[in-house]
Length: 122
Image (cartoon, rainbow, N blue to C red; front, side):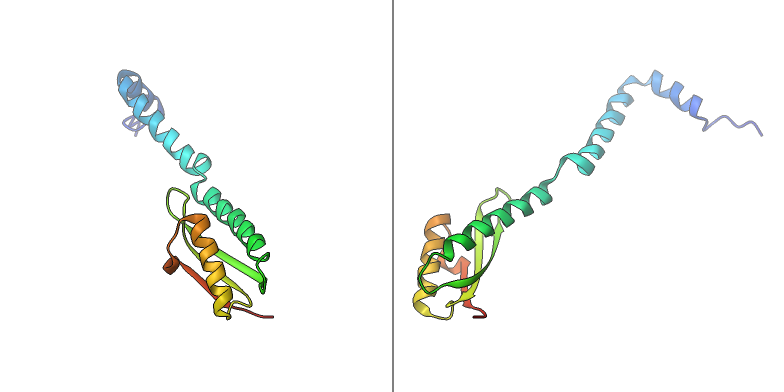
């Protein structure tokens, strides 16, 4: 048939004539590469949360009457703490709940309704 309409050589010739298309193609390729390899937003955000949770866990375990601590935090898009949940032995005690809630509120500048402290396994 010999139809050369969609051949690679013809496409390259067209792109050479339209130099501005190279910029568009380069931008698309760069965007795709950043999405695949460079962004890391979700991954680094998750590792930030994990590191923060470990610090909070360690800090909460220093409070009297608290042991076996598990922590979950949520971060906003800027990486600031916007909520925290603590499950721990002793967490059913209202005094412990108040101590941990005040601790987290003062450390991270969040309101008490953004913190939940409950009892867990002994």
